[in-house]
Amino acid sequence: MKKIINHVDTVLSESLSGLALAHSDLVKLGANHQFVARRTPLRNKVALISGGGSGHEPLHAGFVGTGMLDAACPGQIFTSPTPDQMLAAANEVSGAAGVLFIVKNYSGDMMNFQMAADMLDVDNDTVLVNDDVAVENSTHTTGRRGVAGTVIVEKIVGAAAERGDCLADCKALGDAVNKATASMGVALTSCTVPAVGKPTFQIGADEMEIGVGIHGEPGRRRVPMESADAIAAELVGAILKDLALPTGQRVILLVNGFGGTPLLELYVLVNAAQKILLAADIQVVRHLTGNYVTSLEMAGASITVCAVDDALLALWDAPVHTPALRWGM
Image (cartoon, helix red, strand yellow):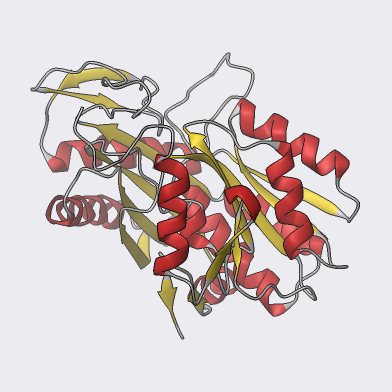
């Protein structure tokens, strides 16, 4: 294992310290690195709080700032944060308007965020993100996983909270965006968790895993390596089957890297995905391309499609200023 770290036990705390130093105008760290919060919280709005295991950077701490999250709780790598972290974050950034938790659909995240919600003294609610269409007819208790679509939910709901929407409206909006969003990914390599020191799974040099999870969970199947056009056809095909979009539907297209794939290749995938969507009479009106929900150094990518109307587009286009996402300011 070769990684630019000092020690496996300090990699998270040192990384969070670096984030806070690099973006000191936007964010600050809570005591004992429990959370990352907006430098100057706005207590007259609904506070948006998210979080999850580290290793997916910039999700979630990179999306703390104006027009998006008010705080993010980082767990250890691929491990849920604790309820104490979530309570500390809520106490730091919340006011009378209440707290909305945005939670990816993993059992540890769901359990710990629910415990925090039950202990919180202010009004609160939860949006559960489960956009991964790779999980078909799942018998797992949690069902579909929350993956890159989380970024779109956090951005759109963050804009609504920033303009002053109430807790109930933010919750309803988040649920609607999640329902309109679907994702699926492909892995070309595994990743290595520092504390483990070896790849999470083994995959041949000429193989790829279709439908992989962001923690390296198995996908739908392992197949020989194919072209970008073939990869896009499978991923977008599964997404369109899930969303069942009407012809002419406008969408946001997010092509997300898992950490080890260069932009050169991600843009090839953008080109391939858009051709397929256009052939299906689906109109791509906004793009987001890059590493936004990663899996450490895994090579691979995911495609996310979110159906939008004028109201959702206005919220997507609203100003945002975070360490990892910025426009309109």
